[in-house]
Length: 513
Image (cartoon, rainbow, N blue to C red; front, side, top):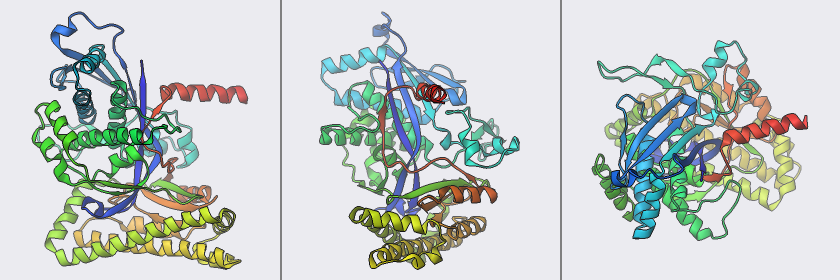
């Protein structure tokens, strides 16, 4: 018996900082970058002594990091104990295992079903975690080999490549602590995607949910929604507790449900679980399942023929928690100005959302005209789009494109204003120059910094077939264009180990050629 679940990474295109507070909304796009969790039994049979011990063996492997950790899982209270104090640990996986198992026992609470879960657990849990290359930065390796910063070079890397650690030691280490190098990432929400995939795989393995396979829809829509809601609640709780703080949760929500318009849950729903940190996972899971989760999500995806492109400028890293802390401090010190800035940002965010929805409606109502306009405009910079108009309907589509561009320029302006007031580089000057140049390229609708901003990444929304040209232009400017694109689908089951699927695809390709 083997279960493979996957969950996507994310890009927050509107709602940076505002999304931390209800009722502000943000648009988050899920992506083609996915984390995979493979769960299978460690042993074919239950060891006779295992029933007496009431502890199950757990092995967690991360081949890309060349790491393996082993634990004992208590059948009584669902807590995990490392078998060695020297082994590397992953708090996100540990919390995911504890809360998924605890929730399973609470939901399948009659004696017969609990015994069935215990039998599965006593065969041990063998958990393997794999992340798509898109989650990790390979820029330094590419530059070290003297290769061009291009999508083609990234595409030539083997799937699920080994991850190289940064050579510089981590910041913020306490005196006397051993400095461990950090993994260079691209900011796609790897911890949220990983946590969600582990929770989903375990809940499916233990028989608590029936999740859809990739690309398929279950016949019972209500039951499917309830199962996704359960995955969300457990993954959200595990992720927040592993972080040691209650974040907005948009990254976990998009990992579960896919691209969406998101309003955060009230932080109070996790307060009881926070109090129980270090205590019985079983009790905390009971509390979490009883809570009324009040997050809001509306399905959203980019209009047809618009493509998400991400780039890695390589101009240094940003610390999201410290940037958020500085913005919150500014809010306290200048409440009137911050309230005004947030109000205008919220209005601009809403305007962009409405215009993107309007473009999707144009595509639905008159596909051929919409397709023609997008194709034509993709070959021109924005100032020449209106010159391509042939009739009133085409004009209305192009007006919506230009208004969306203007709304996003307003968002960028207010985000820069907020950064300057708070003393943090939300859109640093180097990024501003790059983004302005990008927005003047042929076929580019928007270009900005995702999420909390900073130096880590840039994104662009591009019309039609212009993506390749923009990627080449970025390469010439020293920006590494990533392979990741929008994929509006959330968590799902997979037919098998993704590494085996990649090998099969490669063999098929060789046979065809």
